[in-house]
Length: 126
Image (cartoon, rainbow, N blue to C red; front, side, top):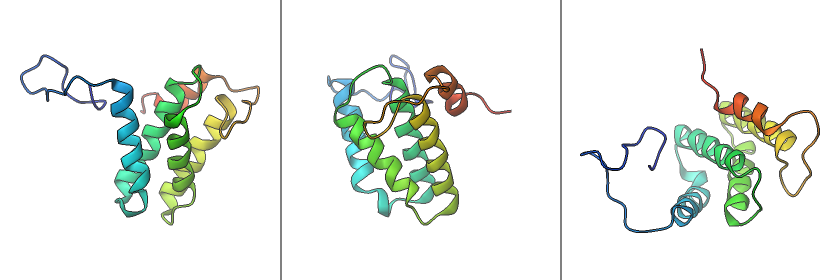
């Protein structure tokens, strides 16, 4: 599936994707978001920051690579944005990630595990 609420594969409204690697699709989406971040609407920027956080959390036990670098770049762009809400959200998510998985090559600080970060950033809201 592409997108959290996207149609499941095999349903009549599913969009067929060519036979590509999911990591290649992910990297291309991140590349496009990172390259066009400054010109995006604020709502799209918020979703891009949240996508970057989700991907960093999902690959917390994995290594680095271009996807991690692009995610960190998107978070950095969000932290420096002129919109107050976006900037605050990006700073909050960056700090949670810094404490749980580490950002910019830092070693994660003790005290906040990956599961706690997932609950904070991906948990359901009341």
